[in-house]
Length: 445
Image (tube, rainbow, N blue to C red; front, side):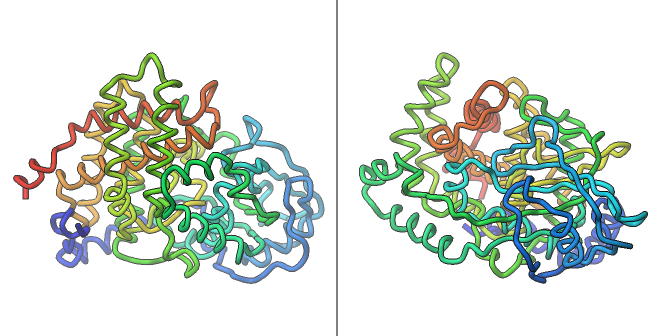
């Protein structure tokens, strides 16, 4: 089913083009000075070695990277020192440090944030086929300055081309998707052999929003008021790029979620469900497991919906990727490693399910409706029932993703693996929507 079938008034922006243009212009004016016009897009290569860790970062590289990014400086930095961010600065995909620069003069940034790929070889091997490190740098080079929302200011970046390694990984997953499920499970039981990491280097430099910024996490999630402000900005982002294809050519055809449904179904059925039943016991119920089974069964069709190239998505909209700078209520959006074209409800499902605990899922429907109202204010009208159906489909896709994460990515949130925290929230959010059956949908149509 096309997006036009799901969204009543999909062409409403033609009827309200002037209003939408006015809204977008107003939105751009509201964007704070985190991203400013003195940074221009640049595809210039940076000569010299690319640092692979904070310890290899030099003032020479920082100066060259800033110059290639078009950052206006009185003079090059003369010295630097770096320190990990609070909590160690190690995220799921990256290692992030704060860099203090000296000698730049009054126009230069005193501090910046440097992001390197994760040092964890297993995680890096599993995600490298998605090309997240170079994708984020390309996003900042080509799109950050054009966003209608607040993003950190781009100060430079460089990466080694993945080239044939990425193509080989993609071909391998495509071949695996056609194997019998028993063979798929046998091969994917050893991900470090199947997905070996490359020695590719990359580093991203962005402006430091400030040590006083409010950072939320899945343990300390955003308040309802903060979620409303985040969704207002998300609606602004989606409406601005609705029906457009702004990504770099290398990233235009990337799906929000990898398109290997049989492979993912096999792993989720045979390994994810038993592991979820064991690790979530005694809180997991028969109804929870039934929701997980439904998500696996419907994964191919739900995946097709989520990957419809409707608008630009953030793609990784957990609460720790959104911060509130000091003295402002405007959210700033971090970590654009998985920016892609897709269905807007994927971002909404990602944010709400990772932010709202199971005992508060009644807010999911209200916040989703508020988001659709914000879209409507910007000239994009989405039928409420169709929007909620798409939200449910996105939640089911994320349930399958977290069943896979339970198997392969035991990253901790507090004292528990990420999937152990997120999976119950996803299941509760899906059940709280009161998802309609296929017969009810036919009656609505």
